[in-house]
Length: 206
Image 1: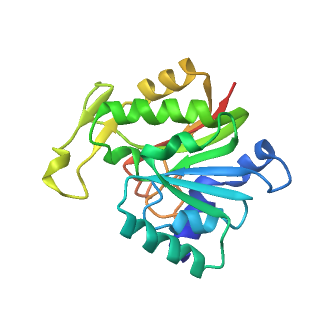
Image 2: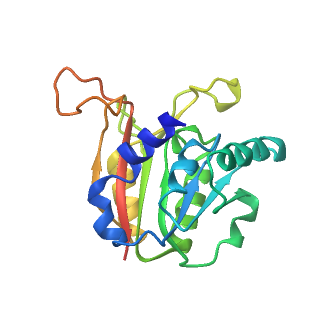
């Protein structure tokens, strides 16, 4: 749970985003790819409601729900991607995702989630998404390995310029971007620091 809190407040909801959300934490957030719930648990401490979206089995989803509840939170809902229509249009203040977009099995999944973000985010709502960084070539989206190999390292990597342009074209204006250190305790501006293989974008719906 501690790692979830450090990642959420060190990488996702960082201080410069707070003025964009407002001074009161009565906002609603959506996490794309809630997994084991460690980030959802942290988000529940500052948002009025957090909705997690994933493609997990009912059994895995229940384990995640139990984990979050053990942390003292009940202001959340976990839904399957097939039920994402439950989220009302322009009803969400903040959307985030960490170590998820790099594990999609098709380009269509990327486009589907961007469309979802565009639909549910309110005007002036903000988001922060992390992507696997494509450093090998200039392709917009590149598959490193076959996703069906069953390894956790199977990845779909993105050209940052493609992501910037696409989000801007969809009315999700990029307001910041960057590459973080592998550990939240390291300084990414330190030449000796090891950078992660991800980059992030922060955007605001116009």
